[in-house]
Figure (cartoon, rainbow, N blue to C red):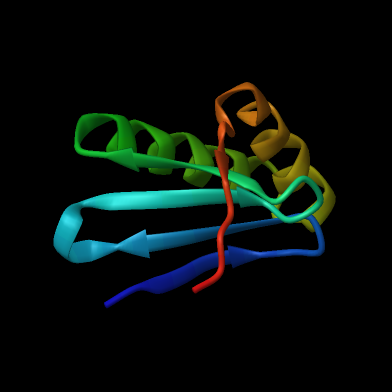
Length: 78
């Protein structure tokens, strides 16, 4: 089971509750990363903080852009 947490023209964030994990994908580069456990919790806390500051797609995309260095897995469709 998965839940789409955020979806914009540039990024999407998916939650995998059973794995206590989140996936972040940059749609433009077709690259992503997977956060699990404590790192996933910190990521979501940071994302909630960014949403509390300003909930616009531009602001959240800017926040998610700070993780671009970690997006090292190519997105592959099955």
